[in-house]
Image (tube, rainbow, N blue to C red; front, side, top):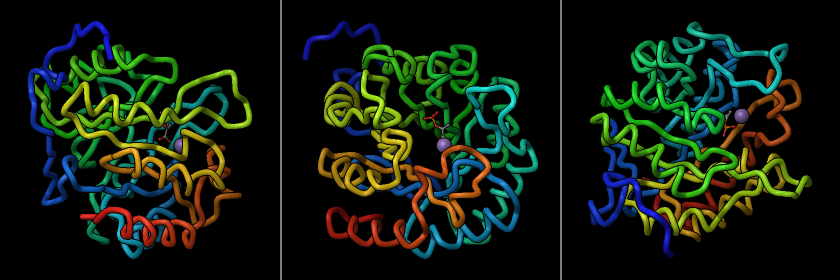
Length: 272
Ligand code: PEP
Ligand code: MN
């Protein structure tokens, strides 16, 4: 594959070995498979506690949940904010899970890093360069989502901003791109997984939830992602998807589906 390589630190030429990010003993990268699960948004202490319990029981290692939600419309629910960070940190601690949450602005990086183990940069912010630069100044691991209209080169250059600032702990996340197809919310670009792994040493995580927008497609696309070599998955799961506070209930697995999927995954690759 010939693409212009304006990035350096993200490149496999520069760093031939796989990057393995060790977060409190959970290793992300290499031959490990990490599973992050949870709701689109943190809603209440009870909701996140119960979902954390179910993620742990199913064998997941990381609890996902947004306290700050990047919504398409300004009148939609925007997340519960800082209180949600505390709710999620408590649930993660109680159930022995790492936590990941989205940070949208440089000003909130420090407070989010105080509460969460991994910071997520959403698809809409992949080229928020001030945010990326700020994330380069800390050591907290970052899951960088691919912009929904971004090329691999643009994606890896976004990662380069964080690496160049001095934070080597970056994971790449394929979460679907915009194509002409409207049946699915996005088109999960499975090719991105092996391509990014050949161009870069950074772990590649797949998000079949946003990548399809449809619950019934999460299982097959999760398995396809693992077959394509993904280093991990980030999957939405909710105890009451029909009443979730974001529109992402339609793509959220029910807890029993999430548990069954992880059981199947353990047959495909060891979850460690
Ligand atoms: C999310 O993870 O809930 C989310 C908003 O993801 P994305 O940035 O990929 O849309
Ligand atoms: Mn979501």
